Amino acid sequence: MSGISYSSYKPTTKVGKWMDERLPVGRMFHAQFVDFPTPRNLNYWWTFGGILSFCLMAQIVTGIVLAMHYQPSGEMAFDSVERIRRDVNFGWLIRNLHAVGASMFFIAAYVHIFRGLYYGSYKAPREILWIIGVIIFIVMMATAFMGYSLPWGQMSFWGVTVITNLFSSIDSIVPGLGTTVVEWLWGGYSVTGVTLNRFFSLHYLLPFVLAGLVVLHVWALHVVGQNSPMGLDVKTPSDGVPFTPYATSKDAVGMFAFLLFFCWFAFFLPDYLGHADNYVEANPLVTPPHIVPEWYFLPFYAILRAIPSKLGGVIAMFGAIAILVLVPWLDTSKVRSTKYRPLYRWFFWLFVFSCVALGWLGSKPAEAEYVFWARVFTFYYFAHFIVVMPLVGWFEKPLKVPGSITEAVLAKNKGAAAAAPAAKS
Image (cartoon, rainbow, N blue to C red; front, side, top):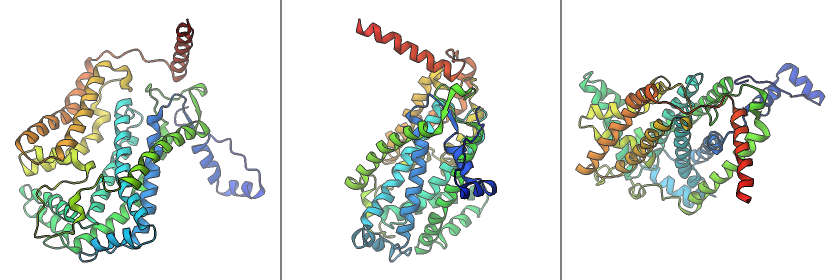
């Protein structure tokens, strides 16, 4: 039944029947979001797909409102952000929700990615689904980078200057090409209000591209069906339950918990995740002592600085993202879920630790000890995909995987039932 959709939709009104015969939108939504069969044993890690959809909608809505008051010019940008917070009705709330929402978006995205890696959600037949997800992540990063420039504070200005200058390293391969790309991004020979205006236009456009990619991602998901914690597909009616109310009610609980976390930062710590220097207006004549991007870029920033060569660092930084596209083919194990792979599980958690460590190292100055450890964890980051995934998949002896989702659920219930009398005695 995986990937097969059906609909029990029956219009009860004359208008509904007339519409259903001509444009069955209601039937389609009912089939995909009510009757769609989902694994009966999904856990709360699967709620982050819905949370990401919410974050995207929140960013688009708050972004549209902010764009009505923002002035994308080198002279007015910084003051317009402050005016939004102080003078626009509820501007402080909209701005806080948008700024904090970017961090919440990436928190949910990173959890979603690690969940996919742990449970093997990239394995056949979900390769295209995974690749679309990686593309969404890349567009997210581009959108966030351009959005970070808009406050036009010190960190925004110098962050844009440093990161865009990286493209000049292409000159060592094709002379003149890198400089041309940099000048095109800047709209001139330095970062100015023209650059800001270009980034503002793209920052406004890309979320709608993201929305289209998310629709494509959901479509691909509903073609192949959802993966499960066991790494098994829905094959029989007993393996699955209707998407509504079972999955939607679980998503609602997860969403509520996430909103509490979101609102705590938006209302009480709105500036906690930002950098203090970004609350100082951009000054091209004063370079901050330590230039760092937003926290969600820090692991890739650490990889960039870990490589001695400028071109090598740029290749490694972009390669750290691009390599995710190849994961479905790098993993040679026939078992999807890491739950049944005791050896690989250790390497997976070492990979997670490496990513967190790179994030911490990216926030530190480029000093000897920090650069050394950044190189160590950068090495393992790539080794995990290029060496560990292929080799462990060949040599590991996984645990026995249940024959179906129903079998796994029944075995778990029997175990719980047997443990209850023993606990009472």
